[in-house]
Length: 105
Image (cartoon, rainbow, N blue to C red; front, side, top):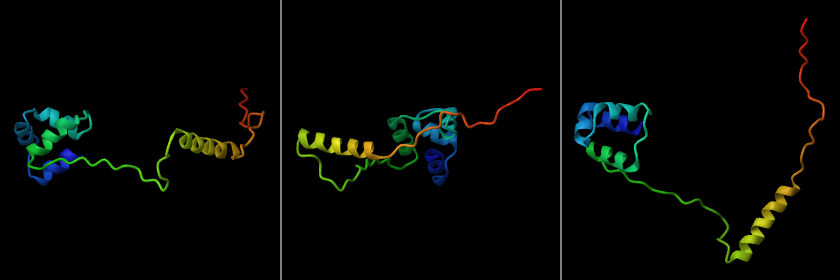
């Protein structure tokens, strides 16, 4: 989707983008139709061939808790989580299968 949107925004055909990137039109088509997945380097090359720059920004998950100070604190937190999980009530399953019976005649 990114490659096709970029190509359209730049007014390029698949053939033109392929020529600029040093690949073939069928490869561009395969990427645009999700028949193939480009590697990061290939995607960067295609984006640059269209005259743009690819930036990757990894977002780190946020937490209200500070990281554990040591392994002991880490273990205590894990035990707290496991204790909470054990405290969640479970539903007992019926021993009888509740499904309609099929009777052939």
